[in-house]
Amino acid sequence: MKGIILGFTLFVLVGCNSKAQNTTDLNQAGNEQEQNNVQLTGAQLVLELEKLNFFNLTEKEDLKATKAEFEKSYIELNYFGGLMKGESMLFTDNRFYFIDTETLFEVGGLKEYLETVKKTFDKLNLKLIISEEFSHQTEKHWTHKIKLNGKEYIAYDNDFGEYDWGISFVNFIEMLNDQLKLQHSKEQFYPISSGNDGRMVLLTKEQFEFVQANYPNDKEQPKEISVLKKGYGL
Image (cartoon, rainbow, N blue to C red; front, side):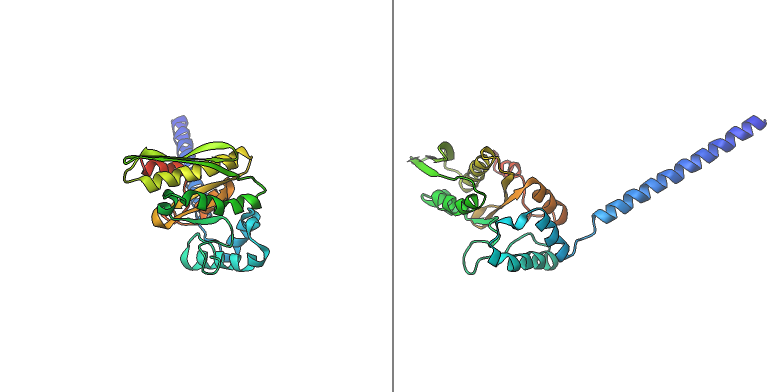
């Protein structure tokens, strides 16, 4: 009888201890999650971006204003965006780009945007030699190719349809990312939006993950190119 009582007592004690341990584990997990969800201050955000070399493409004379804009947009709008250069469509950080995908798709648009992005390649000490653009168009189909550093890329090779602009935007980003990879760069372009208000941003994997963790997961956040491709059925 004593053995039964002793066994029952041990069972209760072990059960209580296990319950207490589970409660402690849950509390610790909750505390960790709460800590992870604490929003950074604007100054902390800029400091973390600086540690990740986000501002290494920004001109020295634009650095102070650029950091101030990132701090302001984060605190006031919780928005991932940079500072525009005056009345232009360019950014002082040299990482964000406006890409009007309708213009990109039209004749002359591809070279125009490649020349714009080339400035960032230059800052990274990478090559972007643009040559041998080829275009053949029928009533229903357009084949548009170009060479970057001697390698041929398809800008568009489809029958005309409702996703023409989006397809050209996907191809544009992929040809740039291929050249970045071939030249052993850690940076890649990530799309943010398409259409007439198309945008993309140049980030390392670490920078991309930081943005994912600290900004809202909404339409203003950069995304993997696979997400954009899926939206166009590619």
